[in-house]
Image: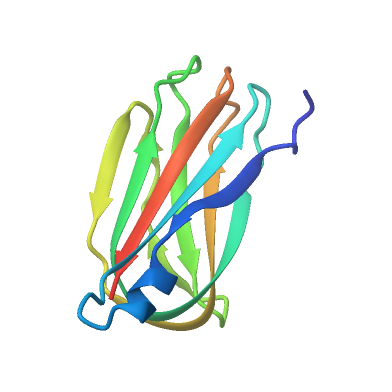
Length: 129
């Protein structure tokens, strides 16, 4: 497969259910990104949001190229970086607690430092109120 054919999609979004149940205002968005062994470019996903982002979770698998790091960036609708995980090593789950008030559309991106060396699925979980 060629570089640049990676995907990034929302796999679970509880915001609609939260709007129907006023007593439970916590929401969660889970997005998965797939990379082939030779993909080196970042993937980006736009998500409409109106609320408070309280927790970011980055789940990175073990990869063939053990020196690969991945960076999670979140930008607001003004293209301002509101969250930056820094370069994180593979084969671990990282929990962050950055509280951001957001409205409009956010862009989340995953940026690998180099090709993973194998086909991999990365997971980003966003939680908020």
